[in-house]
Length: 549
Image 1: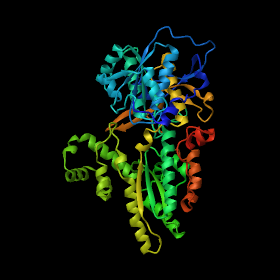
Image 2: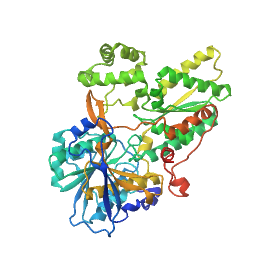
Image 3: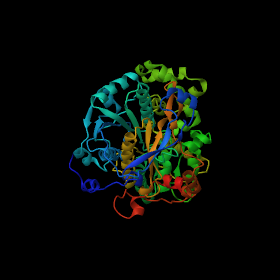
Image 4: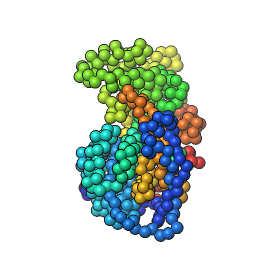
């Protein structure tokens, strides 16, 4: 590992906090049988051995902890995009395993699920773990996006699992990765193979959550990083007073990041994709709203402002959503598309779409239209981060304002600057909240393994209370699943949690946005603080606070 900075040295000494239930010996208390969030019959048919499992809650055991009679080995995988706190999940898992039996061993599969299939691994020892405590990134073992969904992959993985004497595999990932964990758990259970599979909820997007998974790890840290930089831009914006800043933020399938950053920084405008869809708005409607905000501020002499845009906006505009759905099916059914020239691809698309979607496609700027036809990600999704929505909106807005100026409805000057904040937040050193939460998730996963659970996701909740009062346990992954259309087929997946337009976080935002639009009410959160007063250092996200209070 490279030479540590002063901050790294100080952070290495930080001891994350655990729920009181995990402080010593624990017992698992079973709840009622569960069912999937949707499509119960179909999910049950696909997961006959792991469907309907009870929720588990850990409580303090009456007796002192006794070392497990037999040592066991565990494998861990980091899957998908990075999120702050992944190293602490692994640290917590390691410490939890050693607390159960000092001879337990932990193996990390390298570069994601592909490491399991290709038998690339390393043993994670105390010396290695200690170098990565409370640090950002996934570089301890690397991550990847290989999908675990084929029997031949499961069998190849089983070879190395049996060779290393591994009892359980912990998959740290988002909704798709944990869906894969559920499929893997079902496969091994159906074969009566004694291999447990446990998931941990990771994604900075914040869309992997429900009443028992209150937040995915990394969301708190990433939004605080983005909040700091947005605040810096707002301060610059208010100093120069001559630019409109269009800031695209990560969040492919939901607008949780944009909403959280808006609550932190109070920008002049923030687009919420779920509201756009609910109101059946098109691109012109969005531009009209923005034009009214810009014109109102210009009338006061304020020719500057900030606009937050979720990266997945395009997929929530109903006309665009219909177009993308047909494009997805068309591209999945025509693999020869990739070998065509750009001009041939455009003609191919226009000739294969229905009349309405073809008209929508033809109306888009050439660059945006082409971006919609680029290769899908491994899960069949449009790579929306490659679509320059912020530039599309500012270009359309500039034309609308020019037209309004001719009509005497706009008196200002308009100059736009563009930003996309994504990778900047994915590997930051975790906030105190994420450091504690992630460590607890990993430690909790060790207890789920120890009690024989499989097909479960590590769950730690009651997160707005002091850590000692957090509730630890596990929920069956199938409980979170429904059927969705992916790559031209219906597949079981964990249902994404979108911004609730009736929820308190959105309502708080909506109650202030008209004032923020007209006036300059910027808030400057500053950088993440690791040392200092509790109210500065240890607060959860605004979203989680409003949801729980």
